[in-house]
Image (cartoon, rainbow, N blue to C red; front, side):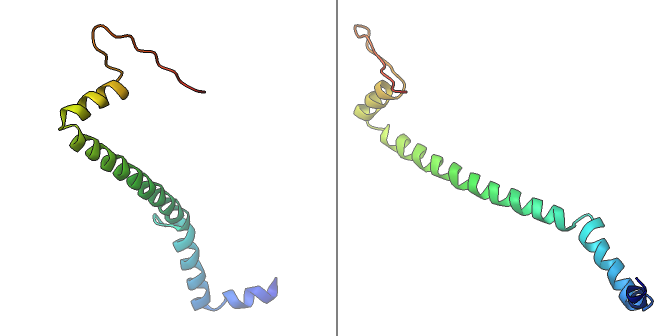
Length: 94
């Protein structure tokens, strides 16, 4: 124990150690919050990619719906619209 106390009698080493402990653990922007923010940033970037892909698909569908034949196909297949004299049976596989 006395071997380590010799190093802490030097004011520069003591000040540097205290600053290092403060900067890594006690400051508002410490090591743990930086890791947490990095993880959140990665999740948000993944969500951004997913949302942009959905937006691209939605824009494509919207461009296709300008044609009346595509509008009818989309309404029948995706939204299950029907004509007055039709019955619709939905088969789903689980």
